[in-house]
Length: 196
Length: 170
Image 1 (cartoon, each protein chain N blue to C red):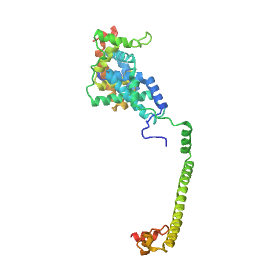
Image 2 (image 1 turned 90 degrees about the horizontal axis):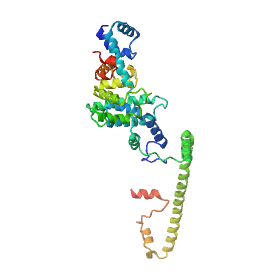
Image 3 (image 1 turned 180 degrees about the vertical axis):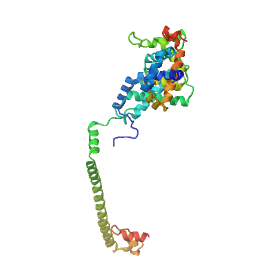
Image 4 (image 1 turned 180 degrees about the horizontal axis):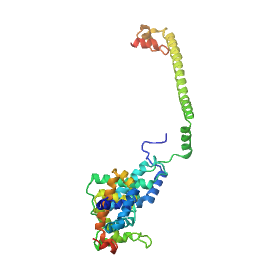
């Protein structure tokens, strides 16, 4: 009786919960989207859309379920959808890792927050090179290697997410790593670098 | 497995995704094959590089861009009212009783009022016509209404005679 037709769909409590969700998972989701898309604009679009989808479905899911893996799966599927709609992902962007000194410096400024001595993460220059190599991969290979090596999914989960057989995941992952290894060989320790 | 085929299994071996039998075969092969050992090291290095990628700083405007797409918050219903509404939904029988009560409260005065008006109309018209006829009979031609009544063409719908009226209309 007090409801009007123009009343919005979410209560204040729900919106507060959404904000908390973005605060908690935003970085991880955005990072994943960035690694997939290779540029900030697409990464933001992917992250936004992923969160909106989660909000829409949040009322109907078990609150104790694993939101994080669900979110990453949504990002991956959105990325794949994006590629289907637009096969040529725009990899040229201002924040794309570049090998110039200037580009490297820009990335380093951003990444310094994370690169503590104990963090064990690659430095900014290496990050930009790895990102460059990732984006240069075929999107099918990129999605597999992302889900496996960055997100830590098992082959079975990757196969389910991407809708391909486990055997395909296995072969794509191997090809992806071989390609990356060829491009990133110069980042390898000396022991590995000189072997043909 | 051949050497080439084994090499293709190295990624899966690295990830622990091979069956125990296949993994054993790879392990045995690796002991005697330097090339495969190196390939495995390289693959492991690539995997390690990817695992050590840092998280990207989340754009500050991420929430700000999502927020307008959610819509404005719902106006909260006052707590007692909300409780009342919930209580009603919890007990459907109570809701039904309430609805019946509301209908009764509205309908009874309406019906009673209508009946009273009809009765008043009957009595009033009856009185009026009788009185008027009585008075007018003294001087029949001074009152056109009475004249009409006498002639019989006055379609005088007297309250209380609806059936005759409806028959006439047909």
